[in-house]
Amino acid sequence: MIRFAPRWGFIGNQRGVTLLTVLVMVVVIGLTLGMAGTNWRALMQREREEELFWRGDQYRRAIESYQQVNHGGLQRYPERLEDLLRDPRSLQVKRHLRRLYSDPMTGGDWVLVKDPAGGVKGVRSSSNDEPFKKDNFPEEYDTFVDRGKYSEWEFSYTPEKTRAGSTAGAGVPTAAGNLPAN
Image 1: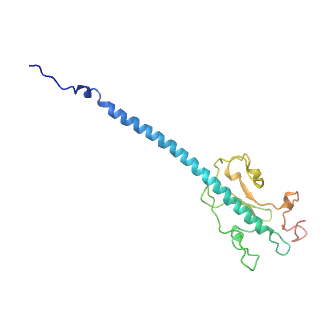
Image 2: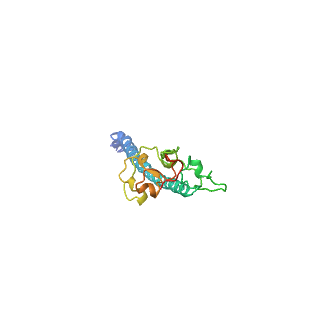
Image 3: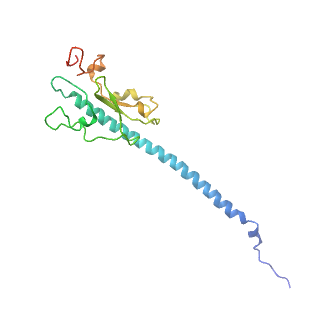
């Protein structure tokens, strides 16, 4: 009598195929997740960059508001960022900024940009990361074009008198005393 053996013999020849298929799938999934992680990191940096620009602009506008308030003929920069929350020169509560913002790139404090008299005329990030945005900035930020690091983005206010060529800042004490700059 002839016996027919089941044709299960082909399975014995393919034992490593399942393992190889699983390993290939793991590698493909790992590469996909790696690319997604890279894209996610870039997306998060772009969002932090937008937030950096917004917060820095808020500080610049607040410093401009503070500096333009004329107290006794002197237009000065704030001595510290907290002065923007409540102007110490005024008897009434005068706020130039709603709250102090942290540097979104580092999560820490801003680096203060000081004028020669020691007043805070701006802020900048301490991050050395390369920005995505390289051009198409508003006019007051045209110095940001082609900067290589966020730490080179300086959100500062310079009065028109000083921008026009005057060497002394507005309200900076001069050799003649505490006279406002012309």
